[in-house]
Image 1 (cartoon, rainbow, N blue to C red):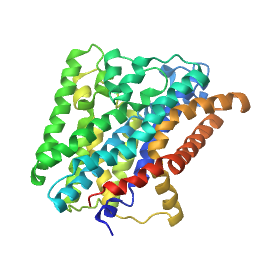
Image 2 (cartoon, rainbow, N blue to C red):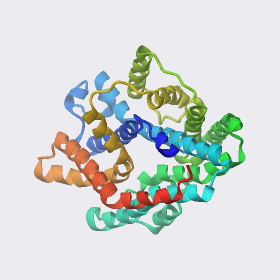
Image 3 (cartoon, helix red, strand yellow):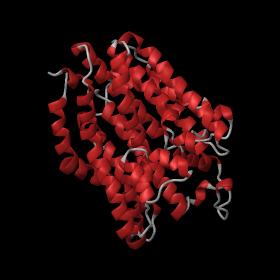
Length: 380
């Protein structure tokens, strides 16, 4: 068995799907609040359905889904963990890192669907939603700097290209991390992690001082987001050094329930005060990282083989779920309006089914052909 096969952790695809589904559910919820309005039982007074009139449950539900960007943080954590685990094994075995081969492997995974979505978004806007789209949005995304373009404009780009901001950040990470791991001795990697976290903290401080309303640049800036990727790198380094630990069952559930409650009570996108903008994220990222590491390095009794197989396969489609879901939501909104009497439940279920189906089709018919080529560039 190739050593690379050992990098497929039992629970990782389930965690990938969970992260993708959280983002999907959050955007379905956003669309529901904009188009369909929330159910009246989430409000103190059924006649006044405004956010300020939400009851306790309504406030929790609203905040929980407004925090869907936590799913993106989980993607960053997973990316840092996996890429570092892979590159450290390569460096340990070969005494070097083949940076060119790493870039090719990442290109084969990311670029085909990414560029398809870039051009599909323009066709979708022109022929389906009849939105006006601008070349100033297309060109930055062709070079993976769409997040910086949006920061410069202080607004989301036209169409549905906004979803690509996190892919741009991951590509920036993929560009520099093999070089850093090539240059930095393995035993010094913890210092590299600290340096990247400090870069993120300093970036958020600077952005907070520069902008009157700093949440948007802090949210989208690559360096502002590097700390979560760096924490993922640290977990990959721990795994490479065979650091083992297993949380007691009670503590594991405490972290899970605690994070669930946290997401329903506190906003992870509130950057109006210095402390929240710069440091608050670590109150949920660090517990999440501990829980993540526990879940990916330990094997737990699970529901059934069929259940695990189903959700592990969904995890393989998580990239497609993330990329296609904005278009599926709009399409399913029209279906719900036309055939289901504007049913909120029908809209949500159709959006989920459509997104997963398209992601499945895309992976099996389109993406998989590029993924098969990756084996030619594997080094371990």
